[in-house]
Length: 403
Image (cartoon, rainbow, N blue to C red):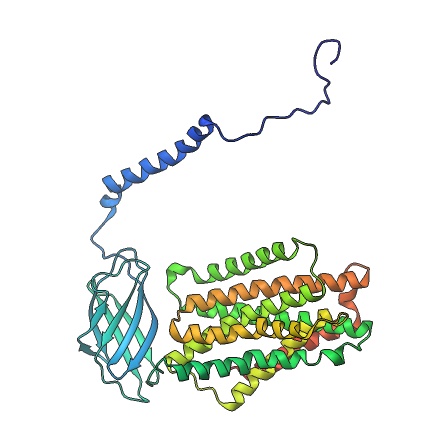
């Protein structure tokens, strides 16, 4: 206290901290009450009725799945208009057909329904389906080449698992088999391998985002495909960065685990797309294409091995990293063949892209720490060569699998 009985000017003033009292709860409740009253008034009085001029509501219908079987054609459709919509008629090749809708009645915004048509489709022929609503709006679905949709049974599950192992687990395992040889590299060799990892992961990010945006374009407009992909990618990146840095900067086995996780999430999205192709009867994977997928993924195993070259992890660690990176391809094939929609594949690829971005940030950070000087490691001949080699290898091997 000074002579005037006042506290010193530099004394810290603290406010009591406790649970919100009744007054605080009252002020929190006021805005919610006003919002509720405003919504009730809007619904009850319908002030927008004076603006209606008799025009029909905006209607959107997205075809999410087409199944061709012995009993005809089944279509999974999703409504996205401003009001519930009613399917009035269905045409196939410009002829009207009786149809069965499950569930029946108007389709609410965002809801789905199955449309069954007893149409005798012809193998190898092209067919066009047109759905007409009770307002006169039409929505078309083209079937370029009609083939029977594969049925789900135990043998198809086994075949899909075998393919998933071959294009997901096997190449990662082969890439990790280079571990003993890579252990002998020097400083420049390590910089090369870490930069190679960044290069191949950068390719995967670009490829995943591009494919996710393409799939999102096929989804219903209400999902806001491109926005969903970007927000999911950034959210996944920020969340994994927070988790990864919660116990310090990941190095060694922890960094290899994050690399395997990012690649695994990417392979999950790829598996969903391949499984959906099987389910629609559109997949015709030849031996050359399967070998191309395998070669394309071998470099992923090398990238996983790079951060653990200076340690000697037990053998089971390599098995775990292999399953983490390649196993989701099997799960994706199974899920995609059973229940597929483009928005879910786009979402999985976006999550994978965010995870890979997190890995790129961590591997880049490791390169900087190794140099001892900010950003110097990125501009050494070894690192620049590694970046170009990693991206180049992924690009060249991707040419084998693009159709």
